[in-house]
Length: 351
Image 1 (cartoon, one colour):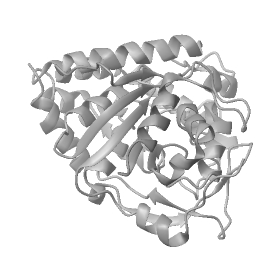
Image 2 (cartoon, helix red, strand yellow; image 1 turned 180 degrees about the vertical axis):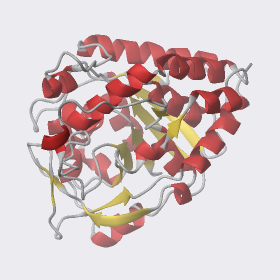
Image 3 (tube, one colour; image 1 turned 180 degrees about the horizontal axis):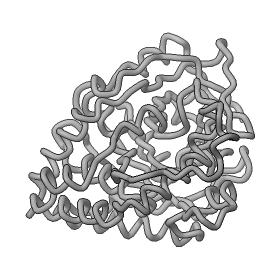
């Protein structure tokens, strides 16, 4: 398929950090992890900066991690049914709107119930159709903030490639370009759609997971101090996180990371693979997805640079080609700024 091409000058201008009041849609696998619910709530409670025009439910399942792990002693805590994951996400979006006393009418759309299987064949859904219609209906740039698998957005690009001239994608996905691989939940579940995003030339701001969004950790003590009891949504989100924080879950996540995201990041794994106790755990939780909203609200919190867009290989690695089109990549997240702003806003939500 042929995609419209932006010049280097056009791409550079398009990828300048966002300023002023911003039109955006949010594509989210909301029921997958609580970080999506935080991100949606944060965006909806930031009307001074973000005009959230639509929210798209994305599918999810634990199949990717389960296939990677193939171990009985590491738990993958989510559904394995894509259609169920999609519906859970859709219903959770509606619930979040209600807790914020905001109407979801005409704003929430179901996405695809399957991942893209063919790079030439979109997966049609209400979400993809709405994105095409919404992007093409206005001359103003539409930010597409994606915090899950990306079939909905890649499908919209295949359905109407001209939206490349109308949108900017801000996506939490993959790892830094220097990482030994980019095995990560959003890309790993949906590799064909992910390759379309990197290859189509659509303006893209990439927020990597490890060493960037992974800085966004919080604890039970911090949530009790800053969010619990401050508002309905604050108590709801805090309770979900606090119930999941335990030394056992912390050990499980460490195992999960060592076998997936952190694989290849040490040179002594063979000598320490067996029999080394993790010791006492001090549980915390990474709220990954608020990184994208933080970038949208204040790019100073997420320092970033322009780089050639990498090639995503079939085995989930980055290949670099300096002749490729540009993208913007975030290199760090100042967690105190993002959490401080989010806590202040969610504390002012309906009681």
